[in-house]
Length: 338
Image (cartoon, rainbow, N blue to C red; front, side):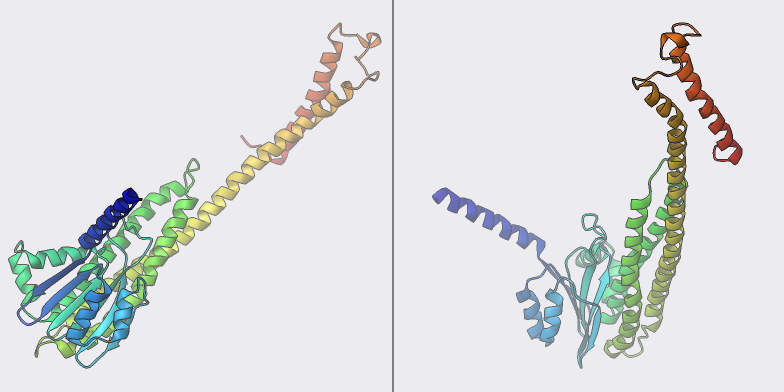
């Protein structure tokens, strides 16, 4: 019992250590604002920030929910938005969308996510170090709205790269569709699922980025026009949507083509098997009769006209002649080609 207690304590300690490693709260100080990035946060972490910046309690619930629909809430001193992106992390795959929650005010920017948005994680690391001082000064030297644009722009660019990767997969799949030795039905289904998930991300994303571009003006410096910056992001989202629509139409063509070719292949196999079965009917019937214990031509001594193998010769001829006649007839009808 004591040993079991120690083992449970060790496991609990190991789990706590793993949780501590996964939790990550980074604070980056800009010239006029603070950027706080929370990866895999606890509720207490978000509630502490909520008290400091007066966040709505419902928005805190939305942050801690694993999957919340995209939304945008406006308040007097900030706005809150939830966006979805495909996870970039290899272990995450594309099976589940990554959720990014954002609080933006004039002197703060808070981002909450599960750490599976690699471009965002890399951007935090860049701002914490001096690896690219010029870019760091550009990101943190102006307003929180400009930094928000940079974050959204990076994530949309990765979304654009993902859509282009789908185009490359379509080009590879085209050869497989017309290759009778390969089965691509499963690949088509998986790629269609991926395209549909990206479409469900990109279509709401455009609407919410447009709303963000309108609301971010309230928290920007005088004379700073972020409209052009966000217009560039919208242009990239439009390209993603256009690419996905073209990919979806192409996938429908591939699906129909694969179905037609598979059906044709199946019909050919069934036709060959049917012809083989039909050609075997005469020999089966003749063999059945000569397997009976009755008098038939060649089955007794009186009919041994061709010697001791008369029965065998008669059976072969009686079976082969109908086969040759049917084969010639089928070929004349065009059922047997080549």
